[in-house]
Amino acid sequence: MQGVILAAGRGKRLRPITLKRSKAMAPVLGKPIVERVMEDLAALGVDEFVVVASPDDQELAHHFEQASELQARVRIVHQPERLGMAHALNCAAPLIRGDFILSACDNLVATDQKGGD
Image 1 (cartoon, rainbow, N blue to C red):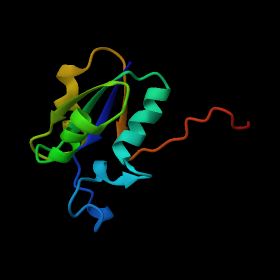
Image 2 (image 1 turned 90 degrees about the horizontal axis):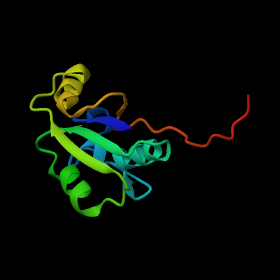
Image 3 (image 1 turned 120 degrees about the horizontal axis):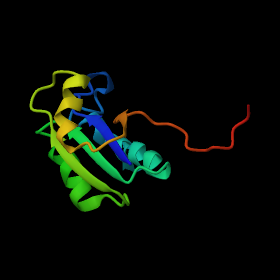
Image 4 (image 1 turned 90 degrees about the vertical axis):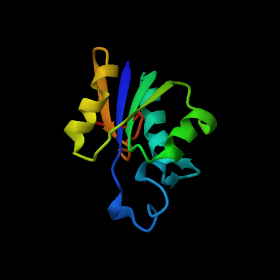
């Protein structure tokens, strides 16, 4: 199954953390938050990701080319202008095949299935 991750936003509300990096690359326990989100989705069966990023987010592209240990295919698509979430999803549309799950780059969720009623 595919996962589409929207990661092109500026992250203004997280300043000063995002002054020199995108929100997607903000570290959480030593890894970029976007990778934490992707790990959670991979644990649920997502094996291919399309990440929509800003063209100037070279750190994100470098991370998934060189440093990530994520066991899934990652393809990066650029959103040339920040025109909202629907536009970002439209940028990813040519790479989407069938059903997919959509997430923001900062949507951390628990994958623990134990919980009560």
